[in-house]
Length: 577
Image (cartoon, rainbow, N blue to C red; front, side, top):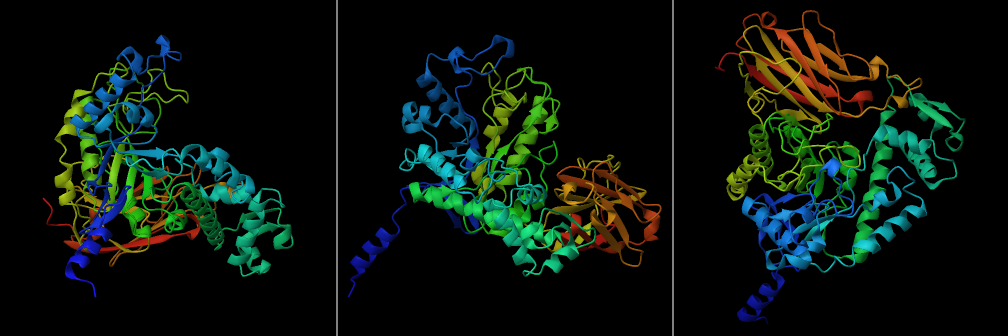
């Protein structure tokens, strides 16, 4: 018989804090827990490092360099940790000088995260994921990195890779073109057999095939209007499960305990890849800059990552740049959100952090990066004003003030992810900007998803003369799937909008060098293409014949009918002020 005292001792032992970071749910909110049980919502910074070395420094391309600012690494480490902590940051993200902090930061050292680049050592997933050389190089990469990290209590967890690029259509064609005797090609053929129940004639209904059997396929292209895209999705799932299981098994060979945090999606993901990750990661990770340069984000993106996997989500890179900066950065591409001034940058930064921290299933957001990039660009040409400090090490006062003003504890205490109402009071604006959703009151004009896994959002707004409805949705399309490299109209992305009592509206969009078209005269359509498409319909108010409200039903379908989602709502056109 167990005595009450013995029971209490056993319970205490069972509740002993782990010797590594864990991830837990507390009252519906996700959080990291330290080895001593302290909660952590990781507000971190990437690339906290000493910058350019004395040997590599070039006055002709000024960059951040600690040797010009500090007497040595010890002074740099202590000063940098003190700065980050006073600004409100509580961890360091990928590619930081973890060993320098370990050596010199002492008791003030911050929790940290490591990017292992395991698959990237052999160019996964583009090199044959099923060849034994992939296992070899993943193992080599793990052996070189993990053993010296496995017992560090400050380590939160591992990212297996960064921005591999799960471009599903292109990956399918890439493996199809591998030599017939390669493991990857053989595994793809097996996936096709499984998808089509080993019936070659079923495959031929969906694909134009060069070959007379599964074993003799030399080439194939998708038939317009077919269901062949299911074969691409099935293969993407096979490839994803191979990757994530290999990463998990390899990491666990050298470290049984630390968290496995995914592979940091590159602002985009495919639904089959996220599903494939579910059983193999503790947290889902993604690089995710603001969708609009005011710092706001589309609701679907993080919600879907959590919704598919049931796992917490961490944002591993986010950014905001200003054309007015002290480092001379030109921000010379369209890859990242850019504003004009530092006050605008700071305001957008704060808005972004508040949006992400207010979601109960997020466990952190990591700013990219500590210092500005070199004035004339780093090795790959990037030259962005991404720093908390400039290349001379001077903090951007507006950014620091924004950091210090954030109350993460309060945001986490109030975290929720409330879904839109089925009745949407359509916001009124004086003027609707052309071709962009920036400036739309999207938080008030977002429609509820009725069915399907969300890959986009639907927004509404009105002015004195028109009602505008906008689709913001992601889809990657490689027209190489089709013979001649041209997607037919029947397989372009499809968006349907139906207002009760009025003819249905259909839009086709996407496709290289092509514009969106709409089937109804008198309705204007605008399209801005990209991995996330913006498609806006301008509908004259006269269509609604003075109605105070109207029922709307809408369906969006990705190219070749791979996935679809629907919205249903009652649009109130009268109550908004």
